[in-house]
Length: 236
Image (cartoon, rainbow, N blue to C red; front, side):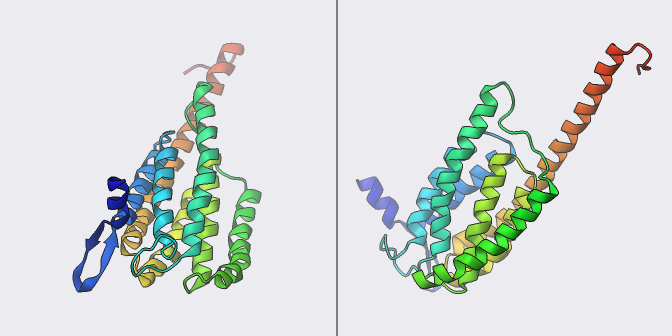
């Protein structure tokens, strides 16, 4: 109980009477570790991410958990719940892939149809959730909170499916999230969003490289198999 009390009361004091809750820092650190594990396609990325989501849920529901001087960001809080549910799906999916003898996930490009659906879902979902979040009393501008929620849902689902494009959805989330979090006073999360923005771009190119390498290896494998089956095929 002492440890739990310390976790819920500990904070880092800043100049001008400002402070950051330690839970916010720890939650974002776990999130960063999860992103690193995702880039390396490690199964442990999912449970680490869930731990961070639970911590951040208590941060963004400031009025529920009695956080001093905190405002409610319902989109941010809601996406932590969504993260947990989607992460369970991703955790199971990646474990199944690993246990069948492969890596946790094989990066692949989404089809153009899927990309169009993702874009429609991002814009449409934001428009649909904005009035709901506003009615519930979320922090303004509410559309930004809704954008972050919907984008996070799509990016996490895309990561579970192994779509390379999911990294770019995170970039779109970060571009909106940084100014919103700064304005709301969540400085640790805003700083981590800046870092995430650069990190997700690196992750995109890492997965892109892995996908290109897989395609090249597949072409070589087909060539070798064809050469064995057809002796008229010239072997290098």
